[in-house]
Structures are given as C-alpha cells and as structure tokens.
Length: 331
Image (tube, rainbow, N blue to C red):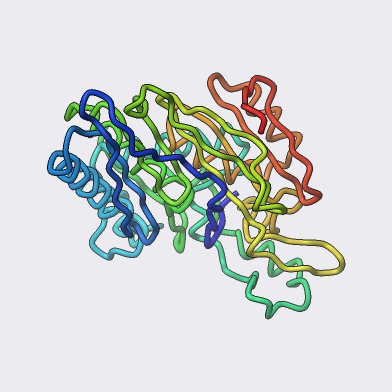
C-alpha cells in the first residue's frame, strides 16, 4: 500500500473557468503546503473576499500539517513515534479519531493500507541504481516492525501506544486528503458557496462553477498523456489519482514500482494508475494507494462493496478497468 515517497500523478486536470453569474467568479491561488503543491480555488464576488477565504484554507492546512507531521519534532505524531515501545501518549481528539479511522481502513483493505508503514526499512531504490533483488530475508526484515495491530488506542484516556520499539506512524498516504477535507469543511462553514481544494492530485470540490455547471476532471492515460479519454463531473465530492509510472525498477524482466506492500515488503506491480472517487478525499487518498497493493481484481471487488465509492484503474498494458457503478462522459 504505502509508498515511501508517494508520487501523485497529475492526471486530473480541473477546468477552472473565469465566468460570471450574479457578480461571482472563480479565484485561484497556487502554493506549496505540506511539502506539496496545493491549488486552492474559491467562488466569490470579489478578489478581496476570495483572498480572505483562501487565507483561511491555508491556515487550516498549515494547522493540520503541524498536527500530523512526523518531520516536526514538536508534533504529536513525532511524540507518539518517540515513545514507541515505551509508553502511551495523550493526544488531541482530532488526531486520535484520524488514527482510529486509519486503522479501520487497514482492516477494510486487509492491511494493504497501514500508517505504520513509516517503520519500514528503505531497501528498495527507484533511482536507477538497483541492479538486483534484495535478499528475501532482508525484504521480510524490512517490514518486521510494520503492523497496524500494534497501534493501541485507549479511548477513555485519548492515548496512542505503539507496542514495538522502533515503530513509527506516518500520514503520507492520507494526510493531504484529510487536509483537503478539513479546508473544504471550514470554508463551507464560512459561507463559501463553491470551490476546489487540489492537494497535488487529492481533489475535493463543493458547489458549482459560477455559470451553474459542475466542476469536472479530465482523466488521461499515463501511457498517452496527450489524450483525455473521459470527463467526470464532481458534485460535492472528492477524487484522488495515484500513479507509479515514474518511479520503478525492472528486475529479472519484471517491473516493480515504488508503492510497497507493508505486509510483505515487496513492491506492487501490474498497475500504473488508480483514480478513486469518494465523498471525502481522506478515504479516496487511502484507497488509491491500497488498490495498487491489492491488485486490480481485488481492488475493484472491494470498491464495488463500498457505497458511494468508484474507481478507474489503468494497468501496465494501458488497459482501463472501472468499478461497476461509475458514470463518466466519454470523450
């Protein structure tokens, strides 16, 4: 599931049109947050109000980063990691609930998603320097401390305890989606009628364009990036695309990608792009990388069992597969 360095493909191209209706138009700002590119778009009557609302979204995303960052030594997440195998750590209810939901997704995906992936030893190289497979014993040892079952939550005390020394948790495959959800919810509470939070491909929308038409995303095949094969209208929902066609290694005639199965330590193979549509970006984010690990057939079967979730999968042969209820506008 979890990529050690998650590459998010920019296959989703949202169409922000400067149009007018009752004095409203779209305003967009692009900036770097959480180490990634964020495009924040809002619908407003004037630029002053738009900039004020975008500032609110930026502040919220920055707050989330401080809460979940494992690089910030002062964050609650870092404190959890530092006390692995030592003692439980009292945390804010917001982070507690996020970890609880992450564990639920781990159970849903049979461990293909696991925030304790941060404990994984980095033995795979996707920079062109690898020429042979790591030894099997080294691969199995690389995930010895990974296991969501060893994340112990105590609701009565609001504590998190990592049972094994050396365990770590990280939110690389869920954090940006969560931040997009929180920024969207805050802007809606402030009366912002419509907009898009695009966190490096983790996209969350609400409302509609000033002309009344829905926001749309264009889906392209990474093997033919110049051609859009479908448009998908987004109505108060989220979409996330993950791709692994840029970071991979060919060993013994097989293509291995940078998205690692946290249960086995082996890289995923067979899929190059996954797009997930869901009510919230947090869940779409987690499922997008999980499907790489579960594989095309299991991934689609799992998605078909979930309400209001759809997916598009492109395999390494360029073939496109979708979940059963997806509706897209073919180009």
